Image (cartoon, helix red, strand yellow):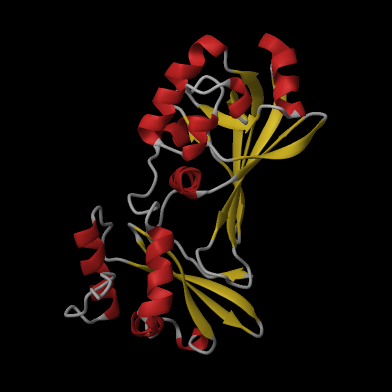
Length: 266
C-alpha cells in the first residue's frame, strides 16, 4: 500500500498513538514465556504506565504475581483498524514495551475508580475487587511501566518518547470517528464523491472510501488494481468541536450549504 500523505497539517505521532489508545477495542499483551492474551482494558495513566485487564485464571496473571517487585518483561500491541471493511484494514500498529507488575489488592478499588472516571469499560466491573465474588471475576488488573513506544504505518516505523506521549492528547473526535466514517460511506456517498473530486487527477480512477477523520482533515483510501493509496485532505485550520468540523468538511467539499455529517432524522 502506498501512502501519499505529504507534510500538510496532520496529527503528531504522539497524538496518533493517544488516539489509538482511546479508539482500539482490544489489544494483545505478550510476556516472556507466556502465550499472548487479549486485554479489553488498556488505559494510559499520567505517570506513564498502562493499566490492563488480563484473565484471572490465566498463566500471565500467575506469572506476574509470582514475579513480585521484579516484574516481567512484556509488550502491549494495539491495532488501529479502519472503520470500514477495506482490503487492508490496519491503519497502524503501536507497540509498548516495558515491565509488567501486579496491582496490589489494596490498590485495586482506587485504581478501578481512576480508570473508570476516564474509561468506563464494562470489563472493569468484572475485575476482582470491583465488588463481586472472586469466582465471578474473570479479570485482574496489571500495570505496564512503559520503557519504549513504537508506531508503524504505511509510511514506516517511528519511536515516540514517553514524555511526548504524556504531553499529547487524543484527537477530540477519535471516539466518534468510526461512526462518522461508516455514516459517510453508507448514507452520504455524495460527500465522498465531492471530496474525491479534490484528489489529483491521477488518483480519481478507483474505488474511493473514507478512511479517517480528525481535527486536521479527512483521509481517503483509493482502492485500485495497482494497489491502495491513502491521501489526506487538510482543513484550512484545525478544528476542536463538532460545529467547526461540520463547517470544515462543507468548505472542503466546496458546498457550504450541505449538512456535513449530521444524519437525517427519520
